[in-house]
Image (tube, rainbow, N blue to C red; front, top):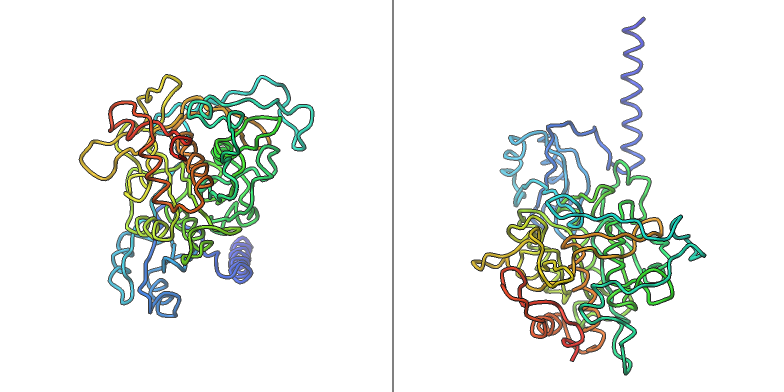
Amino acid sequence: MLTEAKGRMALLVLVVAAVLAVVLGGSVVTAQGPADIRSVVIFDEGTFGTQAADHALKAVGAAPIKTIDRARMAVVYLPSQAAMARLSGQRGVVRVERDIVVHATGSAAGGAPAVLKKPPWAGGPSKDGGSDTPPQELPWGVERIGADPTSNRDGESTGGGINVAVLDTGIDLDHPDLMANVEGEYMALAEVGRYRKHRAPDDDNGHGTHVAGIIAAEDNTQGVVGVAPDANLYAVKVLDQNGSGYFSDVIDGIYWAIDTHDPTVSPSGNDDIHIINMSLGADEGSVDLSVAVSAAEDAGILIVAAAGNDGKAVDYPAAYPGVIAVAATNDQDTAPSWSSRGDGKGDDEVELAAPGVAVYSTYKDGSYETLSGTSMASPHVAGSAALVWAANSGWDATDVRTALIVRAEGLGDANVYGYGLVQPWGAAQ
């Protein structure tokens, strides 16, 4: 009887798995084992999306996760290094690489002290901006770079009309200090596990909401105000509830941003992404991430990323030449020991510095928190770019980047601070 019961149970498991595979369009296969390797497979143009590609993957026991058309990429679990090697030798396969893990750079990981401090008001803010919502205060970082909107005279820019994609853990789409500025969204995480049911890029971590608030929290009567309080935010979820993800998800988010843009004109219109902010990083890069960054640069998008939090070499993607790498400073204009830095020997150098220590901003569930990290520095530069671009509508991404560099306030060691502290109003001139 026991053997018969086990047999019925095994059959039931197989039937359920088969049904799930059909219902979910083949996105669910047998669960990966602990030894399986999450990998990216790049096919040539004639093979990607064909039966030949499917056969090549099946022949090595690949379990599919998702595909990224613009990259001709299949993201899969492979059972072993030997399977990776066999797949690399298949006709039509350009390369096979491990899918590199990437982390948010505003957490305690990597040495950056994440300061989670509850605001002085009790009970937390209400979603509808009720009496528990704190009165607006000006974060010290916004003030330090000269972006205080109360000093915005003669109709100077507040970032209106500029679209900023926040590639992160998502954005709290109902946050009373952000929801009016959130204009679009994209979920880059694969339809598996937790995110099979939760497909909105709502922030289940808090990091992305904090970053978004630094860029464009509204100038109203509550909470905080961002560097560019009238810029448009686009929530692109590439990191999970733990603040972790993979380069393939970041690549997916980058290509989504590219696809919003008409390459025949300077970024404009309702949904063309002007700026990408990536407050995330990894110690190593990848060929495919580099290709995606270059494609975004060619599309006229300005890319800003956190330098990293381990006090060592600049992280990727910030290390790529097409990206503005941003280091962190404190309220004394000094870089903390954990802010990553260049060595003066290659392209992976810091380009600009911005406030990144004890920064107060929006957080998940309608709340506010204080965090530290180069994750907080990067959005100060992204918001600054939005101000500069809005003030100079005829400029392109190269013009904006050049202006930010030329007008930065020098702070000393270029390996640590790059060209210096970002100063948007000087750059806007």
